[in-house]
Length: 268
Image (cartoon, rainbow, N blue to C red; front, side):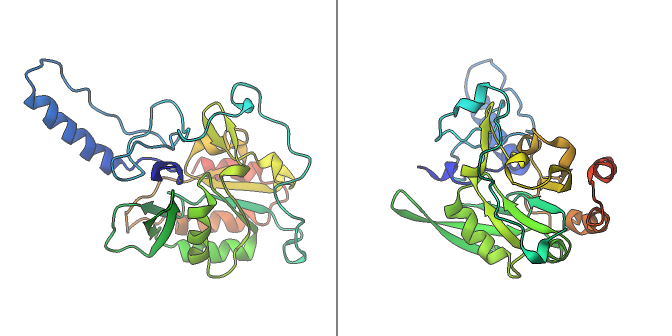
């Protein structure tokens, strides 16, 4: 397993521009008259990478499939039926009556890189094929305040398509308050038509009381009406999206059926 396959995230547009610029220079130095086709900025639907010494380089233009794993039978069929055993344990007494918020990790709460980052908030060692690699993690601005508020208002679940060997230690460092009542990783996703999908019907919660916060629309393709989309975050220290979402979630916490208010949030 290489480092491109343990973390599932979208490509950083700045790095795409850098890669594209380098390829343009190579193309211009050749005698060929073919023009180098410019790259587009990929949408949050794409979540895998080539190895440019960093795991978050260009994704392929069709899906968010991590190349190290083969497709499962669900890929070419209808969305699978919920499993007999729910992904989440029984609701605790402290969370009884609360709505459930499912929160993504990469590019939603943090951005991680195998390349050194001078201002990294965390450095997490990850073993890959017998070799320990350092993962440099940046926290999104206002993530601490956001998580604490979510923990007060909701039953909170971390759900990421990345592998637990990376995501679990990051969550240990990120969640100092025990906000996440449960953590779900790649094996809890459904691999459907080239995407790792977070099937909310498998959680074991009433679907009208579940909200998913994610930067990748492919992650919630089965339940788009339950989503609060967020912009992918990489390194903008002036970003305020998590802070701006708090008033919206204060309203959602009081809703018995979240759909009508979620529609207004998505249209904000």
